[in-house]
Length: 193
Image (spheres, rainbow, N blue to C red):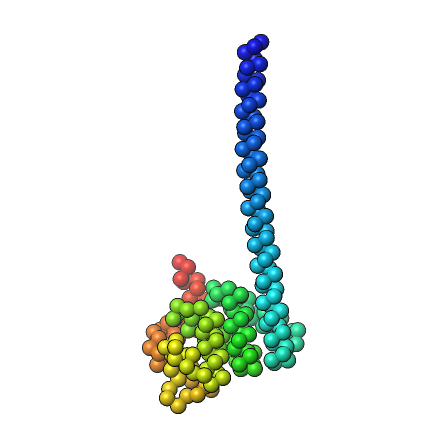
């Protein structure tokens, strides 16, 4: 009978140790889950704020309607998925170029070009977008800092073709600049294999 009590006490002690370690592990897991939740909420709030900034900019600069803003957000999602560049980088890039060009379609073309240059130069797309926007505003020095010249007489980005030629003059790999850039989705898929 005393042997049974001793085993019961030992089992009871082991059970309390297991329960306390389970409680510690559970508390740690709950704390981590809380952090993940807080980080997720913070990211969602920041993403929504970026969407609002872009929407306000599009309304103010080009008089965009709600449908045009939705179409722009759809373009951002499609471009993000195709390029592998996060939407939180694409929005400010597109917004900056739109303020310069005052045309969403042209801004989207230049944002695509910014993605191409960023990939080729291994720099972030926002830096390139700022340089392209400045060049469009007549300050070509920002592009020169990236190693891209538009020629001696160029004062701004007059059209997309001129910048395409400038990329070639900057001695970017022609296959990379003209081949892979034309199909970002296959480039991204091929690079993941």
